[in-house]
Image (spheres, each protein chain N blue to C red):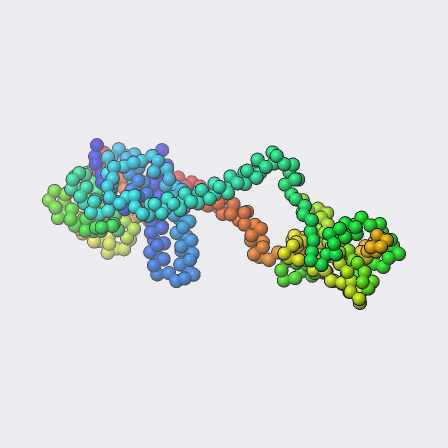
Length: 272
Length: 122
């Protein structure tokens, strides 16, 4: 027991010493290095706060002076803030995972949104196209290209009969749970030369990252018939590094917390 | 029960050292700055003083000088435990009358307990 106590108190001693030495280095460090030193100090302070919390529960030595000074208060605020933030995040996650699933069917937690774009012909048109029977006598449109713009919106371009209504299908082809077979249909009109372009409106909806195949049909609105499906064009929707970072932020934060706990546990085990 | 005073401004370290020494069977008093510590030592006449050097209000070297200059406290053994690791600091501390000098970054608190036991017994 005394050995464990000795290792623990020594760990506290060495951590406070590390913090002191880092603060001394900070006085002479340049901008870039200073930033990392500050991060190191904050991590060490949080670690120190965690390992020293029990000290305040089990010992109350008779003392005088500035023992409960501003530094202690700052450290306690940092530690308790981080602990509270972690606690709240995990509680919210638990509520989502445990409580909401009791009241909703798991699949009901995913909602399917009606998507529309600014050059959509009408909200009902895509449904009409999807349900219309195929008439193989109708001309089959052709997709020339599908490209992702600088943002995340996709532009498809092709040809058909002049002034024809064209239905554009984007079907997800990669095997991602919850997205299997997702299909997005848009409608557009070819110009007088038989050229059509469809661009997603980033403010309304863009395809989630993944692999897709694009195909098109020509739609005869009067007869409510559509042509056979054109040859498919494969394309991928990529994410920027920033988008990847934000999508994985939750995972990253959890890993940071786990690493932090592991470092603490390993440190204590090594000291023992 | 032998009495030890710790003069250390770092609250968490005060408590860590207190736990170590209380566990070893000593009575422990603490002070958070040099001035209050000096006053406490003069009042309590401890069996040993554990002294930090970087302290608010009055530095550790000043406290040590004042204690050694006072007939009533000059025989109290003083052990320094500091972040200052330069040879000149160590030399100065020992010249002023400290019985030993420990650097925080490379010290095991159980070594200090053993040192204390060697100096004043249990």
